[in-house]
Length: 460
Image (cartoon, rainbow, N blue to C red):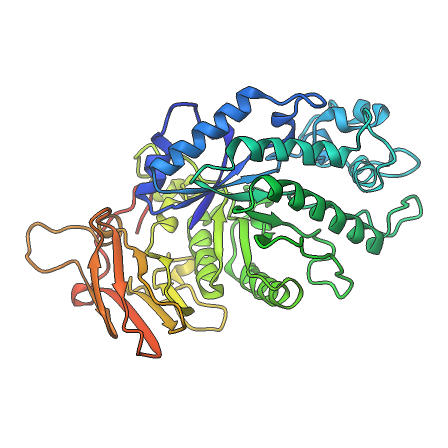
């Protein structure tokens, strides 16, 4: 249960945002670390950025979080190319150094090739370089040095090699065809994984696929041959839609996207996918119910996810007229399994936000979301024997009523024993009976009422 953060949202030495996220049940951070911030000039590492990364990992560890260091840009500046300007051909740099709005530039350039694709062709072909090593080698060298600095840190979960790589495709001006591009990308991912794994063999390596081959019958990219290689996917269409465009449930395709990603990850790469980036642009009308629906899709798909667009809260509760500017906090706060001692069958939090005309939300199989505020977890017993841990935001979701002695909620387990963790009052620890083939946990409100807790931003 994680969020994406950009360094611009953070201040060295200030852990306020992390404390807030911890209170909301967030236990993982995808930290955007642009290549240009690490290697501002060839073979020169930024000590300021490395110091910040080290501090952030330590602060995250103090707040019980793990961190993915994600090699990606937040903006589309420099023609949308995710690299320092010194990695561009001189004539390409001149075209991309001052492009006005930060969106990918698709105008023809260099014998008809748009700048974005020209850079990727150079990246894969290795036909141009600013010095005596290739662009790829610069990137690999930089991240191997990062691994040397942070490899022993307990908060480090892994490294994301390259967000949304682009395969130029079959074009008359491109020497790189789809099949050749996938082979070149596979070679790069393998070299990146080997280099980082040699320094940090215990961390995960997240690898993205180009959007134009995701789910394609032409997919031939190879999984990096290291034990910790994990397929990462990103769903950003709802993050890039115009602010004036209301979120519409019937146009949400996240569930189908994740179902296809799970099938592809299992069949092609023998792994599970991680949704490293998703969300709804906060300025859009109905962004909060939109994100609540996406999180329901994530639960139905049983994947780990990181939400984009998080904003630090001021504590102010917006009026209904301000819904289009509302933060997504109310959607994020929910019970979440942290550790499951077996094979998960299903989990979910039965909460919705009313949409247009008061229509209740529904799952993609047609089942309604009835808003009982009940959390259910079911898993199958395997050879794994241990504790199942669930984060339960007891006050934020279920509230406290000093006027009554009745409990705010009840916990029912099919077997075994449960208790609250002595380290964190919001962690439910369940020791299921290993002789039982299937286990179920249900948390529901007392008397069938709606949960009385109020999340910090526009909760129902």
